[in-house]
Length: 289
Image (cartoon, rainbow, N blue to C red; front, side, top):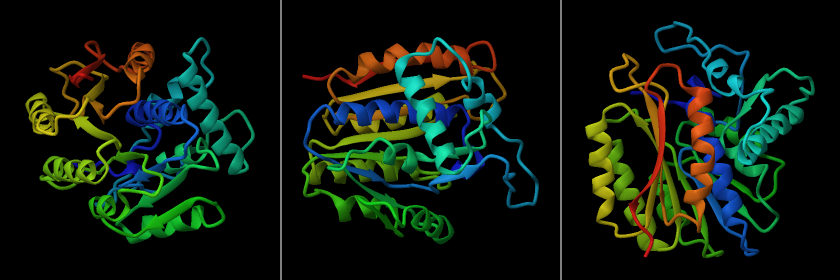
Protein backbone atom coordinates (compact mmCIF):
# COMPACT_ATOMS: atom_id res chain seq x y z
CA UNK A 1 0.00 0.00 0.00
CA UNK A 2 0.99 3.66 -0.30
CA UNK A 3 0.37 5.86 2.70
CA UNK A 4 2.16 9.06 1.78
CA UNK A 5 1.09 11.80 4.17
CA UNK A 6 -0.27 14.34 1.71
CA UNK A 7 -2.82 11.88 0.30
CA UNK A 8 -4.51 11.50 3.67
CA UNK A 9 -4.00 14.79 5.55
CA UNK A 10 -6.47 15.22 8.39
CA UNK A 11 -8.16 11.84 8.02
CA UNK A 12 -9.04 9.51 10.90
CA UNK A 13 -5.54 8.02 11.00
CA UNK A 14 -4.00 11.48 11.35
CA UNK A 15 -6.42 12.36 14.15
CA UNK A 16 -5.59 9.13 15.99
CA UNK A 17 -1.83 9.50 15.50
CA UNK A 18 -1.64 13.17 16.41
CA UNK A 19 -3.82 12.96 19.51
CA UNK A 20 -1.59 10.15 20.81
CA UNK A 21 1.58 12.00 19.76
CA UNK A 22 0.40 15.00 21.78
CA UNK A 23 -0.12 12.74 24.79
CA UNK A 24 3.36 11.25 24.41
CA UNK A 25 5.06 14.65 24.16
CA UNK A 26 3.17 15.92 27.20
CA UNK A 27 4.26 12.82 29.10
CA UNK A 28 7.91 13.36 28.11
CA UNK A 29 7.63 16.93 29.39
CA UNK A 30 6.74 15.85 32.91
CA UNK A 31 10.48 15.93 33.43
CA UNK A 32 12.22 19.28 33.19
CA UNK A 33 15.18 17.87 31.26
CA UNK A 34 14.95 18.34 27.52
CA UNK A 35 14.68 15.54 24.97
CA UNK A 36 15.16 14.86 21.28
CA UNK A 37 12.07 14.40 19.13
CA UNK A 38 13.15 12.37 16.09
CA UNK A 39 10.72 11.88 13.18
CA UNK A 40 12.05 9.26 10.76
CA UNK A 41 9.53 9.83 7.94
CA UNK A 42 8.52 13.44 8.43
CA UNK A 43 6.73 14.25 5.18
CA UNK A 44 5.89 17.95 4.85
CA UNK A 45 5.29 20.40 7.65
CA UNK A 46 1.66 20.97 6.73
CA UNK A 47 -0.97 20.64 4.04
CA UNK A 48 -3.40 22.96 2.30
CA UNK A 49 -6.69 21.06 2.41
CA UNK A 50 -8.04 23.01 -0.55
CA UNK A 51 -5.34 21.64 -2.86
CA UNK A 52 -6.46 18.30 -4.35
CA UNK A 53 -4.26 15.24 -4.07
CA UNK A 54 -3.34 13.96 -7.53
CA UNK A 55 -2.52 10.28 -7.91
CA UNK A 56 0.34 9.14 -10.18
CA UNK A 57 -2.19 8.15 -12.85
CA UNK A 58 -3.65 11.67 -12.90
CA UNK A 59 -6.83 10.93 -10.97
CA UNK A 60 -7.89 13.23 -8.15
CA UNK A 61 -8.42 11.73 -4.71
CA UNK A 62 -11.46 12.63 -2.69
CA UNK A 63 -10.40 14.61 0.40
CA UNK A 64 -10.35 12.49 3.55
CA UNK A 65 -10.33 15.20 6.21
CA UNK A 66 -14.14 15.69 6.30
CA UNK A 67 -14.49 12.17 7.74
CA UNK A 68 -11.51 12.74 10.05
CA UNK A 69 -10.84 16.02 11.80
CA UNK A 70 -13.97 17.40 10.14
CA UNK A 71 -16.05 15.31 12.52
CA UNK A 72 -14.36 16.90 15.53
CA UNK A 73 -14.01 20.50 14.31
CA UNK A 74 -16.39 22.63 16.36
CA UNK A 75 -17.54 19.71 18.51
CA UNK A 76 -18.04 20.09 22.25
CA UNK A 77 -17.69 17.79 25.26
CA UNK A 78 -14.42 16.28 24.04
CA UNK A 79 -11.65 14.91 26.30
CA UNK A 80 -8.83 17.29 27.19
CA UNK A 81 -6.19 15.78 24.85
CA UNK A 82 -8.59 16.00 21.88
CA UNK A 83 -9.42 19.61 22.73
CA UNK A 84 -5.67 20.36 22.98
CA UNK A 85 -5.11 18.71 19.62
CA UNK A 86 -7.81 20.82 17.96
CA UNK A 87 -6.28 23.94 19.54
CA UNK A 88 -2.92 23.04 17.96
CA UNK A 89 -4.55 22.69 14.54
CA UNK A 90 -6.19 26.09 15.08
CA UNK A 91 -2.79 27.59 15.99
CA UNK A 92 -1.35 26.15 12.79
CA UNK A 93 -4.14 27.77 10.77
CA UNK A 94 -3.46 31.05 12.54
CA UNK A 95 0.21 30.82 11.56
CA UNK A 96 -0.89 30.39 7.95
CA UNK A 97 -2.94 33.57 8.24
CA UNK A 98 -6.28 31.79 8.38
CA UNK A 99 -8.09 33.12 11.46
CA UNK A 100 -11.68 32.34 10.49
CA UNK A 101 -13.74 29.42 11.78
CA UNK A 102 -13.15 27.26 8.70
CA UNK A 103 -10.46 24.59 8.70
CA UNK A 104 -8.16 25.20 5.71
CA UNK A 105 -4.72 23.89 6.69
CA UNK A 106 -3.65 20.74 8.46
CA UNK A 107 -0.31 20.32 10.29
CA UNK A 108 1.83 17.26 9.75
CA UNK A 109 3.53 15.57 12.69
CA UNK A 110 6.50 18.01 12.52
CA UNK A 111 4.29 21.01 13.31
CA UNK A 112 2.20 19.10 15.86
CA UNK A 113 5.46 18.46 17.71
CA UNK A 114 7.02 21.89 17.16
CA UNK A 115 4.00 23.69 18.60
CA UNK A 116 4.38 21.62 21.77
CA UNK A 117 8.14 21.55 22.31
CA UNK A 118 9.81 23.66 24.99
CA UNK A 119 13.03 25.69 24.54
CA UNK A 120 15.07 22.83 26.07
CA UNK A 121 13.61 20.28 23.64
CA UNK A 122 14.98 19.68 20.14
CA UNK A 123 13.68 18.06 16.98
CA UNK A 124 15.29 16.30 14.02
CA UNK A 125 13.19 15.59 10.94
CA UNK A 126 14.29 12.96 8.41
CA UNK A 127 12.74 12.88 4.96
CA UNK A 128 14.12 10.96 1.99
CA UNK A 129 12.03 12.45 -0.81
CA UNK A 130 13.87 15.57 -2.07
CA UNK A 131 10.70 17.57 -2.84
CA UNK A 132 9.17 16.94 0.59
CA UNK A 133 12.50 17.57 2.33
CA UNK A 134 12.93 20.87 0.48
CA UNK A 135 9.43 21.98 1.50
CA UNK A 136 10.11 20.89 5.07
CA UNK A 137 13.40 22.78 5.20
CA UNK A 138 11.73 25.92 3.86
CA UNK A 139 8.89 25.63 6.38
CA UNK A 140 11.25 25.44 9.37
CA UNK A 141 14.04 27.69 8.10
CA UNK A 142 13.38 30.37 10.74
CA UNK A 143 12.59 27.99 13.58
CA UNK A 144 15.09 27.30 16.35
CA UNK A 145 15.84 23.82 17.64
CA UNK A 146 14.90 22.12 14.35
CA UNK A 147 17.16 20.19 11.99
CA UNK A 148 15.97 18.76 8.66
CA UNK A 149 17.97 15.86 7.20
CA UNK A 150 17.53 14.52 3.67
CA UNK A 151 18.09 10.86 4.48
CA UNK A 152 16.44 7.51 5.00
CA UNK A 153 14.75 7.50 8.39
CA UNK A 154 16.32 4.23 9.51
CA UNK A 155 19.73 5.68 8.75
CA UNK A 156 18.66 8.69 10.78
CA UNK A 157 18.18 6.47 13.81
CA UNK A 158 21.80 5.43 13.62
CA UNK A 159 23.01 8.97 12.99
CA UNK A 160 21.06 10.67 15.80
CA UNK A 161 21.02 8.16 18.65
CA UNK A 162 22.10 8.44 21.36
CA UNK A 163 21.51 12.20 21.57
CA UNK A 164 23.33 14.55 23.96
CA UNK A 165 20.12 14.87 25.97
CA UNK A 166 20.11 11.10 26.66
CA UNK A 167 16.33 11.22 26.23
CA UNK A 168 14.42 10.71 22.99
CA UNK A 169 10.93 10.29 21.59
CA UNK A 170 11.13 8.62 18.17
CA UNK A 171 8.19 8.61 15.76
CA UNK A 172 8.40 6.00 12.99
CA UNK A 173 5.62 6.65 10.50
CA UNK A 174 6.61 5.23 7.09
CA UNK A 175 4.45 5.29 3.94
CA UNK A 176 4.47 1.46 3.67
CA UNK A 177 5.38 1.60 -0.01
CA UNK A 178 7.78 -1.34 0.35
CA UNK A 179 6.75 -4.92 1.11
CA UNK A 180 9.52 -5.27 3.66
CA UNK A 181 8.54 -2.21 5.70
CA UNK A 182 7.56 -4.14 8.84
CA UNK A 183 10.91 -5.94 8.84
CA UNK A 184 12.72 -2.63 8.33
CA UNK A 185 10.85 -1.18 11.30
CA UNK A 186 11.84 -4.11 13.50
CA UNK A 187 15.51 -3.73 12.56
CA UNK A 188 15.37 0.03 13.02
CA UNK A 189 13.74 -0.15 16.45
CA UNK A 190 16.15 -2.85 17.61
CA UNK A 191 19.12 -0.72 16.54
CA UNK A 192 17.63 2.39 18.18
CA UNK A 193 17.19 0.59 21.50
CA UNK A 194 20.74 -0.75 21.35
CA UNK A 195 21.96 2.82 21.02
CA UNK A 196 19.56 4.30 23.57
CA UNK A 197 17.84 1.56 25.64
CA UNK A 198 15.45 4.01 27.26
CA UNK A 199 14.24 5.66 24.04
CA UNK A 200 10.47 5.97 23.68
CA UNK A 201 9.69 4.63 20.20
CA UNK A 202 6.22 5.13 18.69
CA UNK A 203 5.50 3.17 15.50
CA UNK A 204 2.42 3.91 13.37
CA UNK A 205 1.07 1.04 11.28
CA UNK A 206 -2.01 0.34 9.13
CA UNK A 207 -4.60 -2.32 9.95
CA UNK A 208 -5.09 -4.23 6.73
CA UNK A 209 -4.63 -7.90 7.60
CA UNK A 210 -4.91 -9.07 11.20
CA UNK A 211 -2.42 -11.90 10.67
CA UNK A 212 0.18 -9.46 9.39
CA UNK A 213 -0.29 -7.18 12.39
CA UNK A 214 0.05 -10.07 14.82
CA UNK A 215 3.23 -11.18 13.06
CA UNK A 216 4.62 -7.66 13.36
CA UNK A 217 3.82 -7.57 17.07
CA UNK A 218 5.46 -10.95 17.53
CA UNK A 219 8.74 -9.78 16.01
CA UNK A 220 9.00 -7.08 18.67
CA UNK A 221 8.56 -9.42 21.63
CA UNK A 222 12.22 -10.41 21.30
CA UNK A 223 13.24 -6.85 22.19
CA UNK A 224 12.09 -7.57 25.76
CA UNK A 225 11.16 -3.97 26.58
CA UNK A 226 7.79 -2.69 27.81
CA UNK A 227 5.50 -2.28 24.82
CA UNK A 228 2.00 -0.86 24.58
CA UNK A 229 -0.21 -0.85 21.52
CA UNK A 230 -3.29 1.21 20.72
CA UNK A 231 -5.50 0.52 17.73
CA UNK A 232 -8.47 2.30 16.18
CA UNK A 233 -10.77 0.55 13.70
CA UNK A 234 -13.37 2.52 11.77
CA UNK A 235 -15.02 -0.58 10.29
CA UNK A 236 -15.46 -4.26 11.10
CA UNK A 237 -13.40 -7.21 9.89
CA UNK A 238 -15.73 -7.93 6.96
CA UNK A 239 -15.74 -4.39 5.61
CA UNK A 240 -14.55 -3.95 2.00
CA UNK A 241 -12.31 -1.10 3.14
CA UNK A 242 -8.69 -2.00 2.51
CA UNK A 243 -7.38 -0.09 5.52
CA UNK A 244 -9.91 -0.63 8.27
CA UNK A 245 -7.93 1.18 10.92
CA UNK A 246 -4.48 1.91 12.25
CA UNK A 247 -2.36 1.41 15.32
CA UNK A 248 0.45 2.94 17.32
CA UNK A 249 2.96 0.67 19.03
CA UNK A 250 4.85 2.39 21.85
CA UNK A 251 8.04 0.88 23.21
CA UNK A 252 9.22 2.13 26.61
CA UNK A 253 5.92 3.99 27.09
CA UNK A 254 5.92 6.85 29.60
CA UNK A 255 4.40 6.17 33.00
CA UNK A 256 0.59 5.92 33.00
CA UNK A 257 0.28 6.75 29.30
CA UNK A 258 -1.87 3.63 28.92
CA UNK A 259 -4.55 5.16 31.18
CA UNK A 260 -4.41 8.44 29.31
CA UNK A 261 -4.79 6.77 25.92
CA UNK A 262 -7.67 4.58 27.11
CA UNK A 263 -9.50 7.72 28.21
CA UNK A 264 -9.63 9.15 24.67
CA UNK A 265 -9.89 6.09 22.41
CA UNK A 266 -13.62 5.39 22.95
CA UNK A 267 -14.44 8.98 21.98
CA UNK A 268 -12.32 8.75 18.82
CA UNK A 269 -13.92 5.41 17.91
CA UNK A 270 -17.43 6.81 18.36
CA UNK A 271 -16.74 9.96 16.37
CA UNK A 272 -14.65 8.49 13.55
CA UNK A 273 -16.15 5.08 12.75
CA UNK A 274 -17.78 4.81 9.33
CA UNK A 275 -19.33 1.34 9.60
CA UNK A 276 -20.67 -0.96 12.29
CA UNK A 277 -17.89 -2.90 13.92
CA UNK A 278 -15.53 0.00 14.45
CA UNK A 279 -13.66 -0.29 17.72
CA UNK A 280 -10.66 0.82 19.76
CA UNK A 281 -8.27 -1.05 22.02
CA UNK A 282 -5.24 -0.21 24.13
CA UNK A 283 -3.33 -3.06 25.75
CA UNK A 284 0.13 -4.22 26.76
CA UNK A 285 2.17 -6.27 24.33
CA UNK A 286 4.95 -6.58 26.91
CA UNK A 287 3.86 -5.34 30.39
CA UNK A 288 5.96 -3.04 32.49
CA UNK A 289 7.99 -4.81 35.15
